[in-house]
Length: 355
Ligand code: AMP
Ligand code: MG
Image 1 (cartoon, protein in one colour):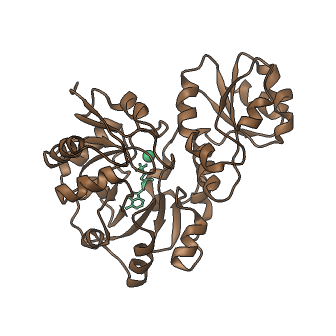
Image 2: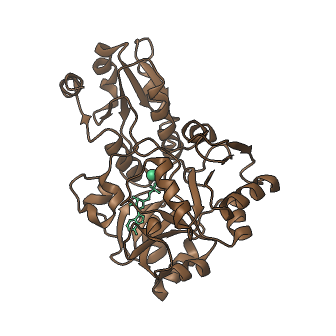
């Protein structure tokens, strides 16, 4: 069904009252709102409304067994939804608001459409002025997954979210670019295991909680890991329409390898790596300077969306360093590429033959 969408453009640091009021009214009315957060854009509803949360699944095309993250104003609100140990509350006081989602046992106050019937709940306190104002005004927790159609790359700019949801939800808030451009980290506080690496790094978890989290194959992005712990991890994710391959070899060889595919391939990488392809017919998408890993990760999802609009038959993306926020980016790339990576010319030829 076609919905009339009102788009509000805001300064994400100082959102207009008009936009806050429109979003708050929609949430109270049981409607959906697409809004910016510091990680990526979210598509949110009143977390206590079963009907509104069901609508999120329909609009996103999301599998019904993939639970939603509930956004709260602060620790006090979190304590009403889930059961926390005192030492974890102390750590979260240092971390929130911020890009860390935690899984705890629920108190049974949220509808099954939020938790997908699990006895656990995922909770995060976002550091984004707009959604904080809406939560304060409505005094409601907001269930919100990332604002993308399921399987597609997440929205890191208003225009991405508008592209996905115009005509499908009544209110879209365009706050420009998200700060991080990658989703929150999901940490299960019961097992102290990272279920999804994200904007809050493993190093930051260790610093805040005083111990190292368990990483394991789920955090690495493995397909075969124990997916029942976090149902969402078993689905195809973050994928452009065009086949994507991750380049894990030495960057000095990139021209020699991709030259043969001029006209067919697009390369996504650092400014410096893209410069190596100057003079060849290979199209490039520059993510930013090689030294600025945060900037490059920030533009990653946007580059996957851009790849789909290019007249090429596949994309090749340069891998990221495997620590800090690069660890989270590699988790997304493994899924976006369906675990297809190569190190040399032969490896790429094999992948291209199978497209
Ligand atoms: P997104 O769809 O981007 O909002 O991601 C939310 C992630 O959190 C998905 O991978 C979900 O499977 C995961 N998640 C949400 N609630 C739970 C939960 N109760 N237990 C484990 N994982 C969860
Ligand atoms: Mg998502």
